[in-house]
Image 1 (cartoon, rainbow, N blue to C red):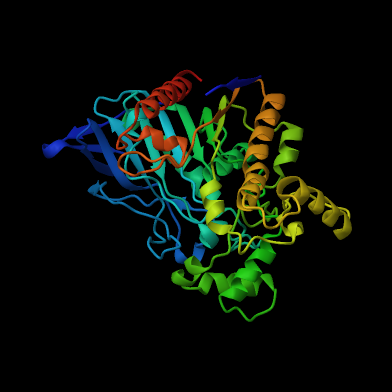
Image 2 (cartoon, rainbow, N blue to C red; image 1 turned 180 degrees about the horizontal axis):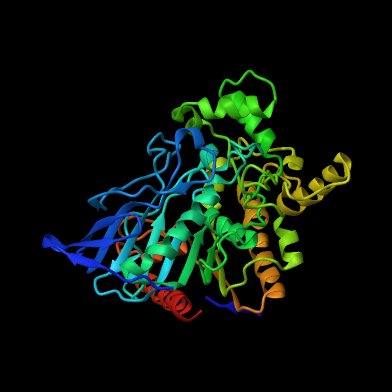
Length: 452
């Protein structure tokens, strides 16, 4: 069913201390959170998993136990392209209403094109006010998260496996924070939405979540899956000074030995991949998304699939200018489309180019034409196709929503709404029109999170 929209429990041990602090016992040790001014407790930087330098591209291991009380006040990021962050970054943040008990849980998977981003250190206060427990978390990015060589030391999809580990932690521990582990909604944003959809299709987290919201991202997008990840790794290594052969063991060693600053400075985008079925490691994603839909073997849950009219446009516009628009449209065709020959690919490229940009290279709207093409190919078509496939292969309700609103609109504080999720923070000074959008989105999302 496709609907279109217009617009086991663990006992909780809680110890309260002075200064608005609260100590909660988890499976690995006690953590102390702080009471925020708006009446919720914040627990920042709780380790949910770990990985050693020797295992930097492998699936994570469970976090180590600790003695005493862990002060949950750490704002941790995984390594970012600007050089900030640390490899010891597999932590999550829990935001819980002061008197939470058995509340629905929202787990947020951040975006960032698989290269940047982190679990926000502040909660979406407008959703938190709806009596929800909110969890945000980090996962490995770039080569650290998505180097895919098909070897035992770099099988691929470490970042996706981090996400599954975080969901497992939530399932085992969220009751301690007043959340219901049997009522977990998973919210992915942009590349986070593609990640969530890949995890759904893999079946790797079955039973760990019960409802899903996908915002402005899709596993069917050409920007979601690498179809030649070894070539990507080899090209990136060459850019970093690798002079060896294409031997996979040699290439793996190069990446394992590379200093962190070299890895994060490389501009190559590493993406999730289809893994080899190795006897020595666990494969998370072995089947192409379209084949998973065809076989109907994925986890079926109620879903909202949503996007905005301007999602991704700003990032595309920063890359495209009239001075560097690509002339050869062949290379702009989606990487998940197979052609019989180079000639047929070129003929298709010419038809697509004529449709979107015409033949007048002096057209003042040329950049907008390219943005429209990329938006259709990488965002709008894959998202709508995902909704259709889920509706056709699942008996669960699937809601498809497009927010027709200028995503670059500025508030009085000069902070733009980059995604729908930004409307759930309460630090925007909103206009009357903004406030109406906020109220509608909060109502739609909170109703879905609570009752599906």
